[in-house]
Image 1: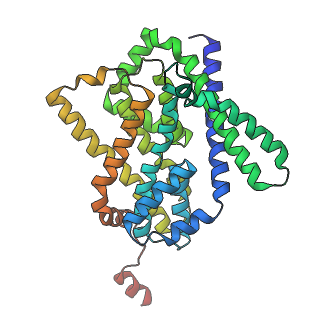
Image 2 (image 1 turned 30 degrees about the vertical axis):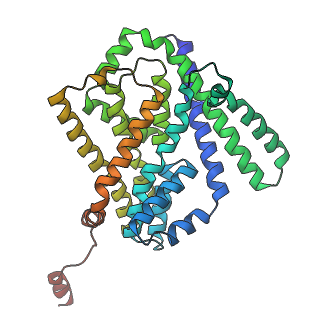
Image 3 (image 1 turned 90 degrees about the horizontal axis):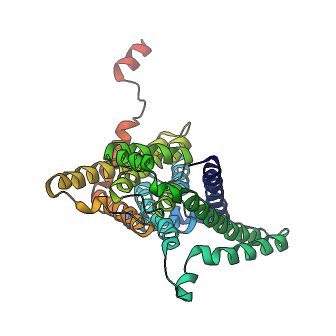
Length: 338
């Protein structure tokens, strides 16, 4: 891997991250304050909160943004912890939509209609429309936000294609293969996914980068799986940072997000790799593609929500126990009065 490949990889990564941020900003601006109002009114039941969190996150393409919004609502006293827990669970489901959109880059067919389904085929058209709209928008905020959405998506796809092209020679590199073998260790893989996602502050971007890497054909299911698990924990860093200096309930809301993902990853890891020790899953050595990554991402997040949902009240209690009320003891109060 020479310097030009590295530059192309970093350039593609820069475009990918910038495109995702531009697209997310455009979507959030179009939604304006309405999302916060909807979250506030329609979360009286936990199941409604799950559906709403999934829907909002699917629209704004960022579970981190949804969770930060929830933390801010809890901080202001508009939303209770009981209401927040459902939305946080739903956000983890909604974020899987991004991986399904990005999985279309792996579509292979000579049929014109099928080729048109590939983002790399229609992204240039969206870019042209977005730029024209941006140039005509002037003071029109709505048109400007729509142009940001279209341009952001196009830049994201171009960045992903650049990353894939730069990493293609790695498929035949023995050093790269050895590195992926090391990542196949579930604990190392989870740590890698967690740290990388915490650094770039987006599980959607992290999953997208993994999907781009999978196009080389060198990434196995065994290497991708633990990285995806770690990505779900790493994305909690955004909410944790947003709760610094906030109210106790806001900090508790961010802890609920962390506990939800940590418990989900722990249960899945113990169950899956425990069964692997018994049955020796041979498919773990098979090459993984963008669609398979989207499937794994969805199965984990939906499965975690289904398993943990009945214990949502316990998540709230655990968060309250972790971030307790600073009450002065009776003995101290009596002594102070004397």
